[in-house]
Amino acid sequence: REKKMSQSKLSRLADVSLNTIQTIYHDPYHDVLLSTLERLAKALSVNVSDLYEVLPDDKPPAASL
Image 1 (cartoon, one colour):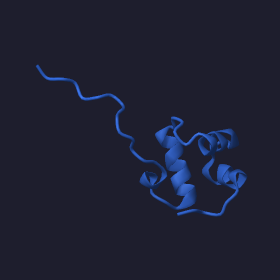
Image 2: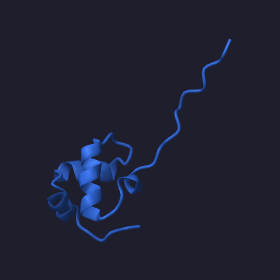
Image 3: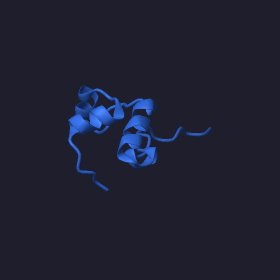
Image 4: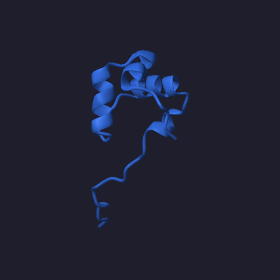
């Protein structure tokens, strides 16, 4: 679900730099610290798990011999 909030306001509420917010917005697959996700989740009143998705490993399974 979407929250109508400016990036600047989210930055202030979450105590996360505006640059970090903008980086996540423009590159959703950018590595983000768990502490940053926790702050964003609290500011947005959502669970941390609502802010990310687990992507499958690109590596094929190892062959067993």
